[in-house]
Image (cartoon, rainbow, N blue to C red):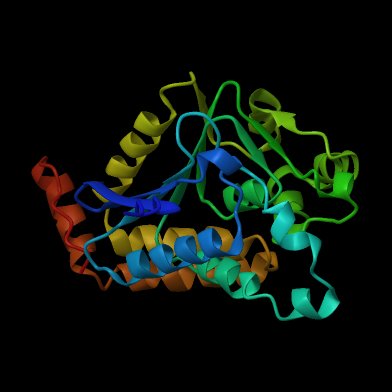
Length: 261
C-alpha cells in the first residue's frame, strides 16, 4: 500500500475570517516549484472569492519561509519555455488578491521566496530571518518582482545591492529598509501574524480592500492621480452599511459590528 504524499500547501482557517496557507515542502526548503505556486494561486483566488474570509496569512513554518524557486525545474528551460511559463499567471493571481495578505517569515526568504514576501501587504519576520535575491549567483536574475517590487519596497540603492551581489539582508536591515513591517522573536512569528490578521478581520472589509488598492496603486501614480483615486475610494466607503455602523458605534461609545456591506 502506497502512502498518500503530503500536500505541498496546507490550508487552514484558524479563526473566522482568516485563511492560513502553510508551504509544506520542508525537504526542499519550501522551494516554490510550479505545482506549489499553482496551489498558492488557487488558494488565494478561492479566498478572494469567499465573502466570509477577510485576511490571508502565508507562512513556511517554523524553520524556513522559502528558499527560492526549484532550480532543478528551471535548469532545462529555454526562452520559449519561460515565455509560455504558467508561473506568470500564478504570480498575477497572487498579486491581484483584493484582501490583505500577511507574510509570517521564519528563516530564509530567498529568490522566489522573497518575491512572495514582496507580494504581501504586511510582513512579520523573526529576528533571525533573512531576505534576498540571489539569482545572479546562478547566472540569472529575478523574474517575479525581485527588481521592480523590491525597488519600490526598499529603494533603488538597497535593491541594487541585493540583486547585484546576491547577498541577503538580515531582518533588522530589512526592517530599516522598509521590506519588513515588524520583527518579533523567533517562535512568535505566526502567532503575531495571526494576531494582526484577527485585528484586521474585525475591521470593515470594504474599507480594508480600498485602503489596499489605494496604497498599492497610488505609489505608481502621479500625486494628482493618487489623490483622485483616494478621493474616489473615500467616497465609495460612505455608501456602505459599515460606515454607518462605525460612526454610530463611535457616537454610542460601543464596539462596532462590521458586516462587509
